[in-house]
Length: 64
Image 1 (tube, rainbow, N blue to C red):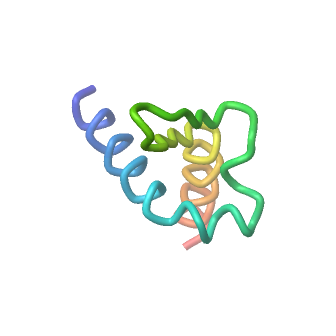
Image 2: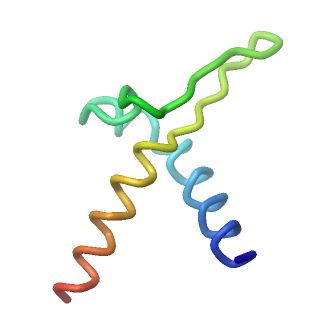
């Protein structure tokens, strides 16, 4: 259980770094992606994007 929490946390951190590039592809505006501002800093939590990209990665790993 703790391993999955660590994986999800790392995926969220990585996706947060790729946010500008992913927004050009349409990710980040999906239902389930949360964006809010606290103290003038924008926080982005891409839950739906993470799930979709995880499914794509799992599909690729099954094929390979």
